Image (cartoon, rainbow, N blue to C red; front, top):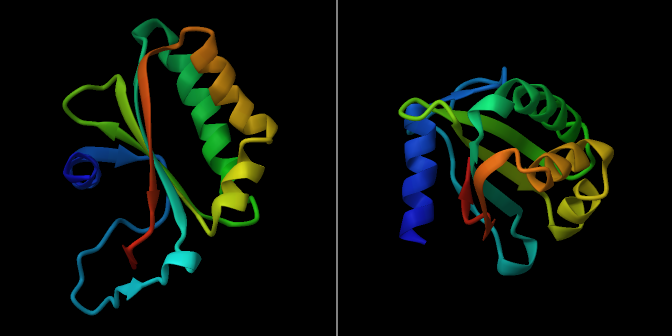
Length: 137
């Protein structure tokens, strides 16, 4: 879990987001809320390294995937972050109201763009971390 926390923290501090939403804030005025176990949001953090010769294709499909996913019922956020130290490395931060929302997401055509890209060898690596929302702003 410490590795995942480090990845998240590093990605927020060392990445560029495709999202046009306001940047993450550590403001002391924000209230953190804890969720009971049965009501916790479901989050996925994906770390992916993209093959350099497939980058243009990836950028087009992940932009579409992110934009369409944000419109899905149960999607709270979908951020795509690019590492500043390795321009081929990306982090996706996906937050859903519940597991049913992620199940719905995986049945959508725009999700399959990403799944097909991975299957066709477009990534050097891709690791998904499934998590529960604990303290969210």
